[in-house]
Image (cartoon, rainbow over all chains, first blue to last red; front, side, top):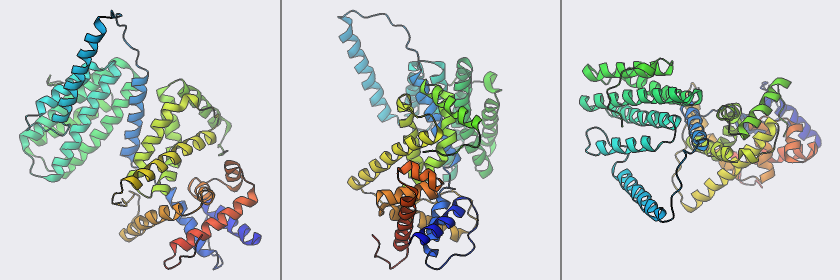
Length: 243
Length: 193
């Protein structure tokens, strides 16, 4: 048995080292097939989008962890219950609104304005420029994913597409501005998201689903996103439609 | 665990990233992630047999690692990966327990590899599911030995250190593990143990 184990080890070392296994005795062949199949698993990688998504998620956690709390005046005892009540009402309002205005609300839905308002509140509550930058970029990325789905579904309303594209461009612009105010880490996080947005917009453009005004707006938005990625997007245009 | 480094510089660079990450340095943790995610992903993929699930778990592993990095006391890449794999193992077990409580249909997503022939892709999809199911039927030591050797690419000595067993035991374990896997993965062969 020891000899068989040694022979098997010789072949396994070859497989791990990437060397071809020319021939093996019949008894070991099924084991070596399994070993080679397992070795192939190690060559599989997560999708680039997923790698980038995790990188952004990690930065977001880090940014919120390292946020310095703003100095707040100490509240008297009698004020605390009132502040608690106000905070609970705010949470209730945000929670209810979130349920009503799910991120899937599109510009042709009456809930889209509620979505914009909810995003504006989130931006206002953000504790730093870095958090604001990531929020803006995330809102743009969510809309881009929706646009991608619309393009795949076909027959999307051009007006809806144009509004969505303008809003993406606007949020990318604000993300770049906020990231510029913060520093390299925030810029890097925003660039990751812009990379995903740019890839999706390029795919949409290649599908050729949108023409006319929608097609022109698509080209303009893509250009704005790519400018942002290359660090030129801090002085881009804004239609002041931001949350 | 003692995964070897190509040179001294990369080893000292890794120690520096670890030190900085413990002090909540964003870039340093991102460097640790970039240096290690492929191996952690390989482990997760082999365990769950599904690309999308492995990607979700990969995020959970690194978010958990980020929360706990200041308590990690290791100094090398090998120790860091060993620590990540412990977290990964816990996440996989949580997932299995959750599936047991809330069973759902498994789709067996095709991993996006550069497979040229569609038949190869189908073959790979089936075997990925099969492999993770077969691994689940091994003893823990048998499963760990094949994952360390074939998926993480550790050599015999490294596997021996990681698992705290002598080289002879590792050889015997991997022989039994691969023999059992071959029997499980061969249709009509049920006499594995």
